[in-house]
Length: 208
Image (cartoon, rainbow, N blue to C red):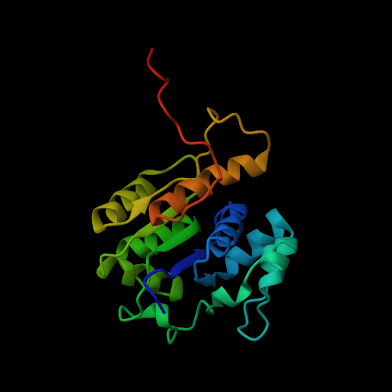
């Protein structure tokens, strides 16, 4: 346990490739990752990425989540917690972390965090990060946004969270979907001070 440890949660919004890539990049950067996954996220992972993930603590296989890239990652840094396990360290404020990302963040999870209804470990860990004044980054992927959802985004922002929508940019001239995924993951990593080379940074033209 160290303040450099990061918590990552997958929920049932579209955008599972963002979460998978985020975990990979964090592990490559030498960070320890505490991962928790909702049942809806498992369904999305299967539909969007073809990844068959089992949630039972004894059956979770990081290779099923990370695919072929798992072969050159230090998987000892990946710590899995069942979404119903309130005994997990990340459910307590005494467990030190460098922050948490919910990536992707469903509108249901957003609502639970906004209103403090800790129905599972994901909600509870997010609540802990807010009450301990630690960085909490939420990566929603939804469109269009209704008034209730917008108000929930305001509520979590007022509570101290950072709402970082999954909005790829085009000024970087992405060549493929992987480039678009990396743009969003890069922005999440920037929030935690994790070095990366995922995308080019904007710079003003040199003056004559």
